[in-house]
View 1 (cartoon, rainbow, N blue to C red):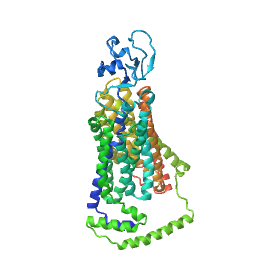
View 2: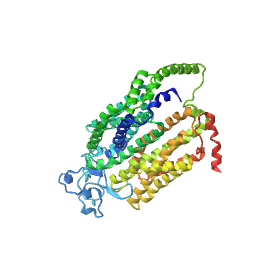
View 3: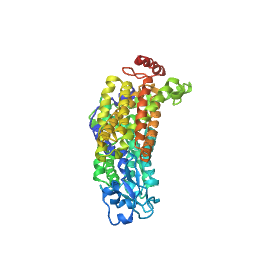
View 4: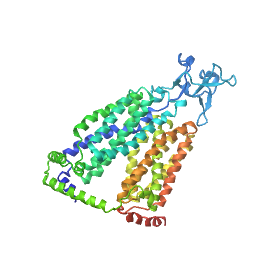
Length: 549
């Protein structure tokens, strides 16, 4: 047992201190749940066409007439002004970006069309006001709509990188509270931003603050809770975020104006911000590791008093001497020229290079499928609120199912099964689009269920294939790949809107099944110890041929 563990042993008890911090952490997790998915409703594009004063000023048309093209165009007043085009599914629909350059009937031959120079009319039967309809992010500006969730994912990538570095440098508490302030400010200001540029910039900071909050708070919880319940506490924190996500469809339904939605979520963050400043404390482990012994003594005394345990302060003096000895030993090792493992070893060593390439492809494929199915909720038909609720509510059973499967079959085989099933149901969506909307939604929901489970399996499997001194680097590489792929997902869905809705599903289904095939070339890790050295990791290769047989 290390000197740190000896010192922290008296407070290795889940008492009043931990209870307060965990309650506040869980409240922030529920409140933060909607953050990653809000753009689904914020950049929803309602059915629209060119604004026609002769029609729209007099309210001559019904909401149905905006969208549905009648079989007899002579009975439609819209047909005098708006061309009919073939939609993505080869069904006739009104043009959303052009109008006739003069009032004419649909049957008077070819008439040239012009762009919507007078603005657009949006079908808002639900009184929905989205950023797309408010800023007219359609037609030649339509690419700006998928850029919003891409900015969010870019912020997530930046937050994943900076959050850990800043938390290690300046402490868990300062960076965590800073991330919460960024979240509150970004969400609140977004509700009043006057332009689409402000929306894109602020969405970046929402992603940055959100992922920094999640990662740092997970680390803090793991450092202040006893070993025997540490895993349960941190997993519950992640699962409660999924519970918070399930609240989003109801909030979006009750608050159809995107500004009100941002404002409401920002207000919820403010409500948990003040308790966080009062309750959250620095990690004692971080203080001890960084030699801040006076601060550590004061905090440990506070924790010991709250938990009604005794603290042996003499061990702090021993710790100070031990730390000086350890620093001297580390300096001597550096002088000996002992080479440390680095990111370059993931490329330099052949068997590690093979593993990181296959795993990077797997992380890319799973993230594209996971985010692609969820972000495409508005295009699946049916009630978009209930559809999105179904897509996010299956995350909890997906995590649970993966947990039991990995214990039975191991990470590698479980991943191959989950990934293959996910790909099959995703590829089935284009075949079902001509059959029934309900079947399409069910296929998407099942695909999301297994995509969630596959993502959980990847977290476990990645760490089982690399030695201790390269484990964090392997997660770092895979994390960057996953974030970059998530940034590209909105534009993959955008291609489906421009050309044909089958495109995203073919891509998602093909690459996720390809990832399952790639796992065939990696070793099985079930019932095997985690590799500590390079030699341990290399010995895992002997299990590849065994499983193939």
